[in-house]
Image (cartoon, rainbow, N blue to C red):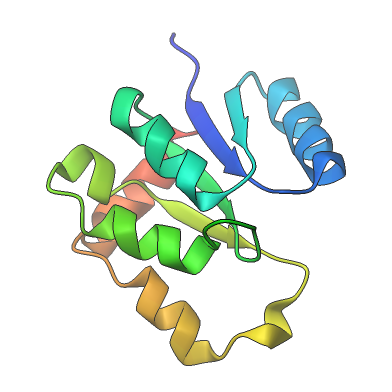
Length: 118
């Protein structure tokens, strides 16, 4: 069985290493980048099953990056499940998170994708 591919977008090396260690233990293939612009660059050439997206990153933040991903014309890119992670959630409103999370996929597709990562 092929390992699921997870893209971790996080500017903290400590959090990247912790996340890699936890997910590698579960046999996931992890790719890490430090900002939203790097996420978009990776998505040009690679496919992922899930993105763990920090909200506060330099160059391009996670909300802006998520919005750009959702605009992509290829469904396999625009519908990738994205999990927001942040240590500073108070910098954003609930409406900010809802706007970033809007997507064109169904809830059942999202649930099936999450279960397929197990």
